[in-house]
Length: 603
Ligand SMILES: Cc1cc2nc3c(=O)[nH]c(=O)nc-3n(C[C@H](O)[C@H](O)[C@H](O)COP(=O)(O)OP(=O)(O)OC[C@H]3O[C@@H](n4cnc5c(N)ncnc54)[C@H](O)[C@@H]3O)c2cc1C
Ligand SMILES: *[C@@H]1O[C@H](CO)[C@@H](O)[C@H](O)[C@H]1NC(C)=O
Ligand SMILES: *[C@@H]1O[C@H](CO)[C@@H](O)[C@H](O)[C@H]1NC(C)=O
Ligand SMILES: *[C@@H]1O[C@H](CO)[C@@H](O)[C@H](O)[C@H]1NC(C)=O
Ligand SMILES: *[C@@H]1O[C@H](CO)[C@@H](O)[C@H](O)[C@H]1NC(C)=O
Ligand SMILES: *[C@@H]1O[C@H](CO)[C@@H](O)[C@H](O)[C@H]1NC(C)=O
Ligand SMILES: *[C@@H]1O[C@H](CO)[C@@H](O)[C@H](O)[C@H]1NC(C)=O
Ligand SMILES: *[C@@H]1O[C@H](CO)[C@@H](O)[C@H](O)[C@H]1NC(C)=O
Picture (spheres, rainbow, N blue to C red):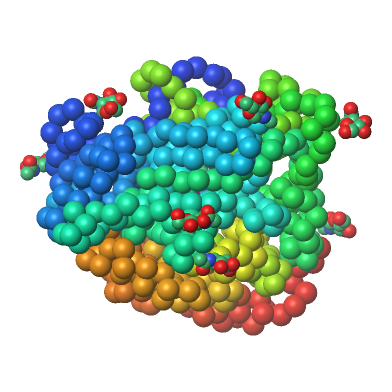
């Protein structure tokens, strides 16, 4: 990529996120062949917000319904139970990457929570809020703030729904209080599950914190029934003070765990090939501290479609030319641009004039203005919206226990030492986001205090085309999951991240007992959820090119792309890994001997 091309790209990137025009909102993930795609349609397909599942299959459903009340959900669940029909809950945007939302077969029923989206009660005496299952995080934040209430820690993206984010254990970043997972702020969960004929084939279950099933139902992968209502514990409005501080990453391993104990809202964005980390120094300040800051995260803003297309084309060109240096240069400029713009922080809602940015919690905790739009056009969109040419990526997201996270970080740094440019491939997607999550009582929640790593990287539109430096990300993925026993984010990841995952949860068997009690015929389960829960095989497949998309760990060259020079090779730092690499066979063993030595980092 020429210098001129880079500069054009970056200018367009800046332009793309700075111009605000009306944008088109993400489409409904459900499409049906019969007309009038609301309130009951047949012969449907469902996808996720990126328009592609890990195996790129199309998910079909016989019918979708859009209930507006618990009564309508009861009748939908009862009818499907009586008919022995598979069911799944679908949400307004369908943000999960894995195939959690797919019912098996062609005839399943999708129960959409698109119109189950009301905040029922906000009580600033008990500091609780009662919401329906399809309410978005944005609504919780907005309605809470009106009553002077906030959730202390949330995911960073407005578009998630209460039902979906709890089902997948979604979180923000904190080791304080009950930690950063929203499900640990649930006080009561109302669920509609299948039931016997005597019960009319459906049952409403109210599970509060003294109910014996409480810890099973908080993180459910959607297999227990329909969450219709959640009571959340909030707290009084507060203010925080945010400063991003750039440091080299020499001591990142040593500092990572300690940093989260020092700052309540800490996180770290790591650019391994730039050998740089951005520490978010973020703490509570007294309510009377002046400041009305706002966080409108730049990558979640409406972005000009033409800019997105240019950036994507540039990356496709770098991929086909194997232009590592181009990726590094482009990534470096994107990082610099984002840092200069404080990632979208402003001191008063408009301008960034310097750190610290002080403001109310509800204005800083989460964002997503690209969701806004009353009007349909293609001029701007969320950067990953599949209806425009834009971002298309894999996400590898897992949490590594704080007690071993230093070793994991040092292992990644060893990989960077062996191949300094390889992890530039993450820079265009704003590096590796590292967040703190606390051990949770939920059976499928985090087992221990941990650091969550969110890694986003290029995905080819062609599943058979290998990626530049894919061997490094494959090695990191396997190293995290198998050497460091990391837990996968249930709503993200490629299939290989789930291999053996359920075995890492001490209470998995207790979760399965509750599942059997609530849905004995497995109507809310699918082949995918059964595989994830260890009830059957099918997480991976062995086929030509399967390792390229994380559908298998390669065990032979045909699982990679031998005709394009990618062969199945051992990892260089974690030698048990098997990755698709362009290295020749003999070279790997030489590197291994070097790579295992200490003192590889010369700085
Ligand atoms: C831009 C972006 C930013 C993100 N940021 C974060 C982040 O900061 N932190 C984080 O942890 N994750 C984040 N995620 C991932 C996200 O948390 C998960 O993908 C998410 O939980 C999905 O929520 P959803 O409402 O879209 O649910 P879906 O993906 O539609 O559903 C997930 C599962 O829950 C089930 N389900 C949904 N609603 C119900 C219900 N009412 N009752 C029963 N089952 C139900 C579905 O059937 C499905 O099995 C992000 C994703 C995107 C796209
Ligand atoms: C579906 O139902 C909701 C709630 O009653 C309503 O707002 C919406 O307009 C309906 N859609 C159609 C296409 O009828
Ligand atoms: C469902 O729709 C597809 C096209 O999307 C069509 O080919 C098929 O015949 C339809 N099936 C039924 C049962 O209507
Ligand atoms: C709580 O609600 C009452 C009544 O609506 C309101 O007067 C009061 O300001 C609220 N408290 C806060 C902190 O907003
Ligand atoms: C939970 O519900 C039961 C039954 O309604 C009730 O007796 C109990 O007090 C509730 N517990 C809490 C903590 O609200
Ligand atoms: C849920 O887990 C918490 C923490 O381990 C425990 O205190 C509580 O008793 C559990 N609740 C139930 C109903 O088992
Ligand atoms: C904030 O309030 C505290 C008392 O509640 C007071 O001591 C302090 O001076 C106030 N600070 C500002 C900046 O007004
Ligand atoms: C990294 O920063 C530390 C201080 O934070 C410093 O001691 C060290 O020399 C720096 N390393 C490099 C390579 O700049």
